[in-house]
Length: 151
Image 1 (cartoon, rainbow, N blue to C red):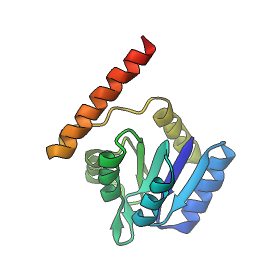
Image 2 (cartoon, rainbow, N blue to C red):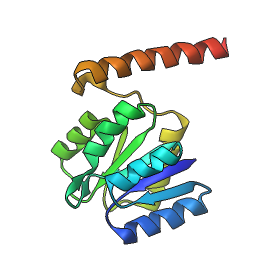
Image 3 (cartoon, rainbow, N blue to C red):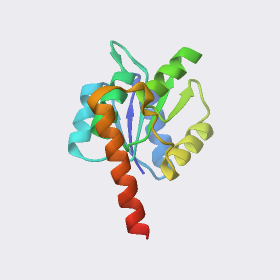
Image 4 (cartoon, helix red, strand yellow):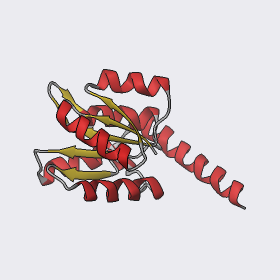
């Protein structure tokens, strides 16, 4: 699985990168949303793991933009500032899963496996306007295409 990790803490990035590469994943790391978008311009990713609080930047803004540009890529949000409100906000931004820091590496691997095998459906109720409609139509078309290939 090709994974992009977005976090402003270089120690966490290196730890996750080494661990996930040992699990046979291809990992790219970014320390800013700008750098994250540069990686997406260079290729596709199967999963994005992002920290919600990125210094002056907000990982959930990256998640919202990713939902518009790449709606099928699963997103795992993580943060050290855990609260029910932050969990709800991350789901509202389009994150498929949420892990509060600190978490065990085994929990991270299990969550990645869950997302890679069968990503949960995106909740579009918090997104409004044309982007939400476009995403809804695209999800419908992709579902029809998937079933036509199987049948």
